[in-house]
Image (cartoon, rainbow, N blue to C red; front, side, top):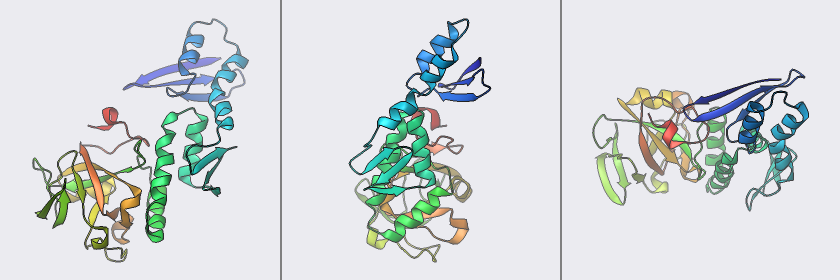
Length: 266
């Protein structure tokens, strides 16, 4: 049996190759990670069966887990929402996190509930398609991270002019986006016409789109219930929402599927 241990920027992992030749990558979030690391580091001849039992602990625990929330349940690698089986890239990732013992899966559960709260069926479908094609970052409260290109000034003013409310104060013109600000506008004023690319709404995009749109790029948190439409132009790289929260400016795209402020902010 061979193993290797890495600790990159505080993110620990183990790669264990059993005598059978099977390799297992164990994230630091695994419930038995510390026990595995201690056992391998202090045992001259590790027992394959004992190591496998520790590795499979997350899977065994996951198989007994039934209810993830009031509306989301899990059993035998299947996710159900309100009793209906959901098989998507998102739910398959959720299953992997559960079986790995990664308790950050709760953000994905909340995301599913937030998405269900979006009043528009078309908006839900458009957003889900938009997210499925990309490795987007999900926050612990069930929102997703988008990017916004802004001016290179202290208050991160928007590149385009419009009318929006920032922390309860209405602004007309180039909208300020200071860190921590909640930027919003009435949902009824956000265009739901996906065939019209440049029209009213708060725009959030992918890294490629936003970083080319302005000299500074922000990360913003968007609740899926607030998404109104995904325009067809620009290769579906942006969306319109009625609300977002400004997090911070970044120099590079996020690399994690779950939001980790200390690790993600550059």
